[in-house]
Length: 336
Image (cartoon, rainbow, N blue to C red; front, side, top):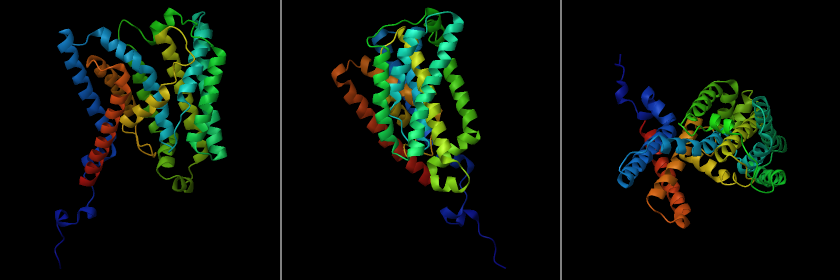
């Protein structure tokens, strides 16, 4: 009777992957995002120390966190959409609209501010619902649909607030973006916790299933259309929250201030290791990507880069990070 073969002698494809290697392979995007974020923080701290003779303090940390909050929330919403193999270019328009609404209607009592905030988040959800219905029911390309609704939402924002202005109550600002300390990190903690709950829910499983293989997901009973509609709706609600944080940080409104978030939310998603072809990624990685984006801006500032060339270097860093991350990811998956 032949002796059983040692598993080590079996072909590589005939063995099960070690659990640790499997975990690394599945989360390589998040691991790389955390690594890049750590390196960018170290570089920024080093440059700050050289030029200021001290390490960044509470003021610098608080400013960085507060400035990153809108982008982090927008990136989480974009991630949920991208997981379904979609993309949302209306991010900037929704932020513009909700930011304008906040600047006009927020002033009032505490109860009034709570009600207005809820209604603004609902408005963002309705904007996302429109995207989801057109993409899902109309079976149209998300990039075309959301590019069109971007213009619509931007037009509505300008109609609501033709010129920069309005005001946000001081108490509201202190609650969301306290200038005395990085308390806004608590909201990011809640967002990360919400992501973990969503990831383990039926909807979370469906998001990944639709993004990985929609026909197979449908064959297994996943309601793909419903999943896409909910993804865009949740995304719209998160963009609205981003608009509220943006208004609170600026203590006023501007119907064009959210325009940049369309591109930067996608940048944060890519830097966070989220697969733009759907089915793989994490909102936690997107949060890391948002902070990486902010740290790049800070590093370029302390490097005394001419603002005219700042976009060039940001783009160059993004290309290097994406290419390098993709190569590392392939090597890790191939090796494991």
